[in-house]
Amino acid sequence: MILSSTQTIPEHSAVPRHLAIIMDGNGRWATRRLLPRTAGHMRGVQSVRRVVEGCGKAGVKYLTLFAFSSENWRRPSDEVSLLMRLFVQTLEKEVHKLEKQGVRLRVVGDLSRFEPKLQQLIKDAEEKTAHNDTLHLTIAANYGGRWDILNATRQLLLAQPELAQHPEKITEADFSEYLSMAFAPEPDLFIRTGGEQRISNFLIWQLAYTELYFTDVYWPDFGAKHLQTAFEWYQNRERRFGRTSAQL
Ligand code: FPP
Image 1: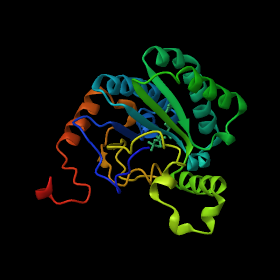
Image 2 (image 1 turned 30 degrees about the horizontal axis):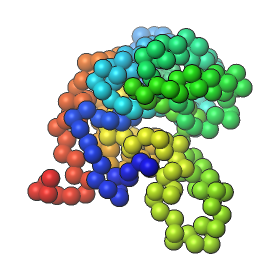
Image 3 (image 1 turned 45 degrees about the horizontal axis):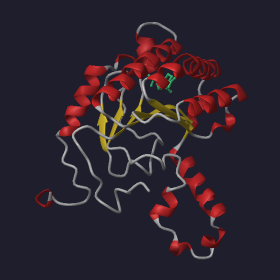
Image 4 (image 1 turned 180 degrees about the vertical axis):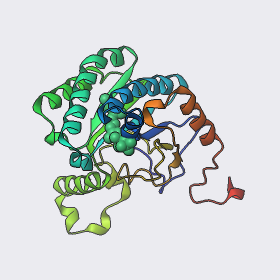
């Protein structure tokens, strides 16, 4: 069972055990260069590679990337199709490498809206890498924090219908077991690139005590050096989890 930051004081170390990232700024990176927004997403895949490698080297155990939110369907249809094609191509091309690097890949979110081919590729990739344990890479796709919480509530009540008559018996631990990130500790560090300072319906339950780091760097420019700067910032944070400085 994964310990909750509101119920216990989690262990934490110099390097975040779990890093969650909102990869923002692809569109603006491209527009600045008079390129179509989709060119920014294509370059963004290279940053994903650099960050996966950097996290592996630094000893991060869980890396969770927000690739497509429940709200991103509202984008122009050619951009949505390009993103879907990029997911397919990246999965086809990279899974073998991930497998060799010891990376376990998972995709979380409501996958039912994706084409059957993409759903199958995801399933295959998850199975092929299921034995790995060096780095747990999770891609959040058609993911929304509110969807996750509602989904967990429904799953909990389906599994234990008697709880509907005794809601006072529901604990955080019972509930969080049904969240899509139940396999991972809560993120220690959250990074959002691209200058906005929002959570944007990402892991809203799990970010309760996460350190939040925002940078103006656009995602396609984000690399090992920026990751290192974020880790140094994290090392200087005083993680109190509700206690006073004197108690640490
Ligand atoms: C946000 O930038 C980025 C996205 C919605 C897509 C992220 C996708 C990738 C980095 C590529 C594919 C990833 C994988 C894991 C294969 P934005 O378009 O909102 O940028 P803007 O704010 O400048 O418009």
